[in-house]
Image (cartoon, rainbow, N blue to C red):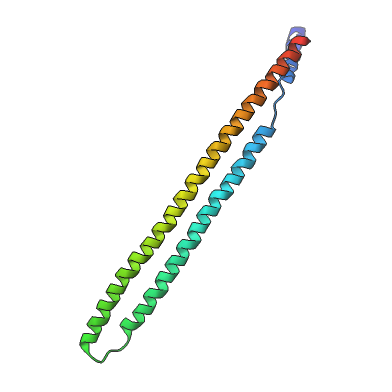
Length: 147
């Protein structure tokens, strides 16, 4: 039984010689939270702008429907009102779809920028972490061999 206790003590001493730095994990968590916040901001801005476009489109459609539903003196006026409404709707659809496309393009552009920045930051952090780990292991090895 003495050998098992000696072995346990030896393992504990060995593990103690190689300290674990949890600051890297904490930094990674903070960076992930910051990145999530940035992505959320992009998504919320896009949702807000899309809601604005939809609301504007709905209001314009309802205003045009008022003209269509108004009483007319001649039967031909109803046909003209429907034709005008259909033409206005085609125009509104083109304008609003272009506005939605601009929102999508902006979201894509901002997302790519965030991803590029994240990749650059991640590479720099990984390089610093590897250098620190290498230095720590070298120090621990020197310390262990000095004993």
